Length: 275
Image 1: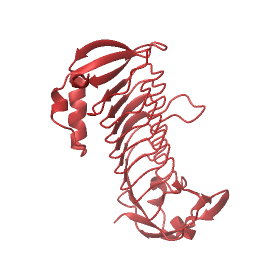
Image 2: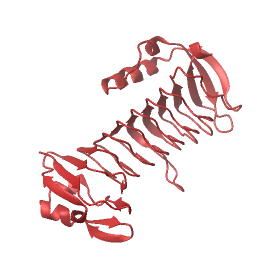
Image 3: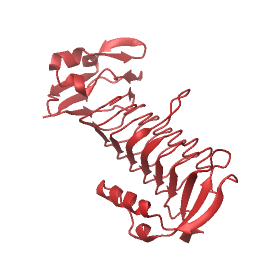
Image 4: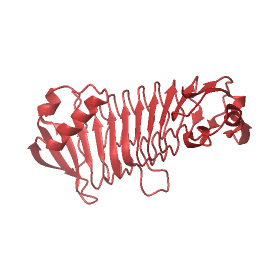
């Protein structure tokens, strides 16, 4: 039986729960978990003031229930095990995680998977801005792992990401892959303007039936191709429940190289049948 944290008290003031670490609570009693200090605004308060606690994390599974849309840092620095959020989650979900899995059956606020190093996040709803991004003043965003988003996502997805994969079924905002160092961004919905601005390496693939955004003038058309690696990526996404149309597996893609204001070794792949 998993450890279940059920929201009992609402508050307009955000909670920060990075002190709730799965590796720690699996060794604690229910009373100890309730007594763990979290931030309520700028005050330390026991978790038990806002959540009821039941079950056990012996099997390394933790479930958050209730309205957690203002609960920040769920699953931050997770290294193993599984966390489920039965509803919405707040900012910094899975930030800096190194392993394990987080599943959200709802929407997520900004900075999901920020600077994550490994593991998998699957968001069944929408996500905010800066998914898998670098924190302001940092050097690298996401450096490994996978982030799968069934709904829409905001601006600057994969900002300064170094490795890993982000896949979005729905719409994405502007400046996806901004300053991207490497990694893969796979977008199945309509994409905002200026994808790949400042990217150095990596791949951005656009699969939507919608008209793709105009390429920045610092990207140059290279060729029309059928990338073998892309087929393997798409088949892997199917294993995780993504609805990947069969025609994408055999499609040809226009390849644009850039950003030539940087190294120019990045690529944006756009379905050839849309041009």
